[in-house]
Length: 365
Image (cartoon, rainbow, N blue to C red; front, side):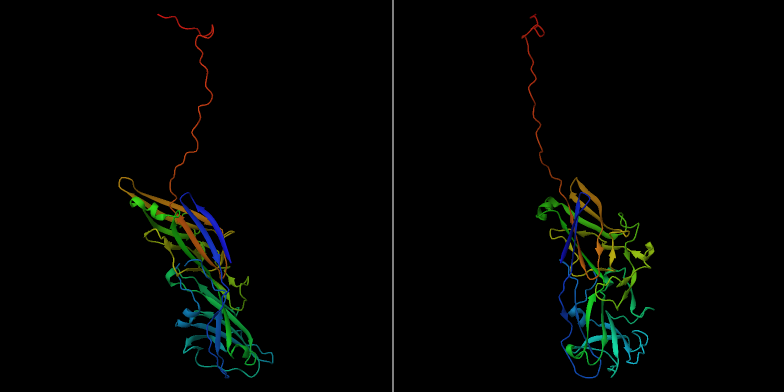
């Protein structure tokens, strides 16, 4: 599913916004074992896939298996006599699970009880400092200001599991992971179908800065949530997945520089590639404001010199959980000429000489 938004940035730039998602299911393990030990498996659903490839690392089948962090598990055992220990903290308490020798492993092993059931909560990537909040199913998450250090965030749940009801999944607790964040990428290109023609005669375009901010000047007001809590017990795309109620003040938000140093804009443009900006889902169609702010320089060389341009565009997009968005910017609208009309002469005005007494010939001297 694709959604496209077409917007102009002043008179010299244009921006389109694309969101998409994929329902592809990626198996994370095909190894199975039949014993009394509690073992795990999983797959990744509704992966956020963009049209093109801004900084953080996406977690998919391969990267999750190859990562040293793996995923973390909380597990609550409930007995058949109605005794319910503290949710998520009594049996598995942030246990790291990593992929080794074609299987997801953890240590020390824990075993299935003969009675009762276990409710499992999982997230990735694993962080040793992660704890459940007072709600007993939520974890806190902070968005790194350094885009290069940002990570994708996955979550999953597997409730009411016993050793008898997991036979259909190879006797493993299978987690269906979902993406909890919104993913943003960007591309910048020159106007028209023939950028080489624009760059003729030694004209160059340099992108000086691209900022996503809460104000049109790119710095006065912040835009994105710095932190929030995610409820691991929620189903996918649940309205209460994220709690950002404590992040309404300007100091609790932040801006991001997609480009912060000069980059020459060639005929192939600039793209974020396969790295992305990850943000907590946020609706910018209401009170929260978001602007894309761009500074770029056109250098004509010779006597003309250079011209620095500053443009911005307000976005009113609702960035949703598990969705990918691509910011497509177009710069360099050429100054072109055309002829609208050549004004006609109108009707001839009559100038009559010697035709009547009111306009006689002058006497010859």
